[in-house]
Length: 373
Ligand code: NAD
Image (tube, rainbow, N blue to C red; front, top):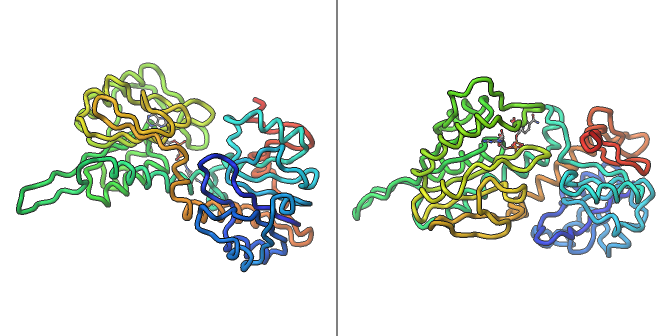
């Protein structure tokens, strides 16, 4: 059983899918691990550290030769996997909706592609959940990015020269990233409020010491769909939410948006007209910018200024904390593969629940019902 760890090819991707810690654990399971030279450099992991952990380190062709499993943070180009065994697993964040053509290419090249972001959100799979581990760090980093762009302080400070008032931070979308954004902004001393379409988040917001801002008047709304994810809301709800946001947002210094709906474009939460009511010098961070954006005018990979308000649209926020995000991503991959490790066969064998959820391709075909349905 040979596991290949590739250097990420996507522009701006600094993470790596294995660390010396996980290499050592895979070796302990009896696997042979081969790491492409330089794979960990951007995450501050030297080739020697992988070698010390028991991996062979070399050029891509040697790493891929006869590999049974290819690990990645993002999906590798199927055309660049020559040498891997027929039917080899490709295990990574494969962005199946956004990169549909690549999924087809994995099928025609005969690979079994396993999309880690389709991992079911069930208790036993929590330690394998890349969406949670990466979103948590994104929520933290979004607040630091906002603080870095904001020309004022976050905490209230009473000084001999006078008082500096606390920053008002509004978090929109209280999933994993939003919860961490609330906690981080609170730790920095900001006054924090937050909103979501899922009513269950109200208590979580309160428990973190922030103020919930919720649409109450619209009947018959149910923001929570399957798997605890948000559903797309009715037009009536959207209008009520826009009105509530309009009055609240004008008083905010920092807004962090994180709202996503799986398989659909991100919901538009803030319009240009609403931005124009904010104070100059305010900062908005749009964590959903690569999924279409929650904020009108946000540009992926740029910081734009509209009406004196900075709109931050960094791409791939977890990659901005590459050492920690790699460590957690690598553990998610190890926790997944080791949980299914069959000692006799010396390889992982998936069960139906998780196998069917994450397997995109098999036997030359696309097999995942979320992509076929
Ligand atoms: P996500 O990244 O899909 O979305 C971020 C947040 O945006 C969500 O809270 C969503 O409700 C919210 N949102 C969507 N549309 C919105 C709108 N129009 N206005 C305001 N907010 C909007 O969410 P996530 O962080 O992946 O979490 C999704 C769910 O999965 C949550 O219920 C979370 O508790 C659950 N979860 C479960 C596990 C587990 O049990 N293993 C692990 C992690 C998360």
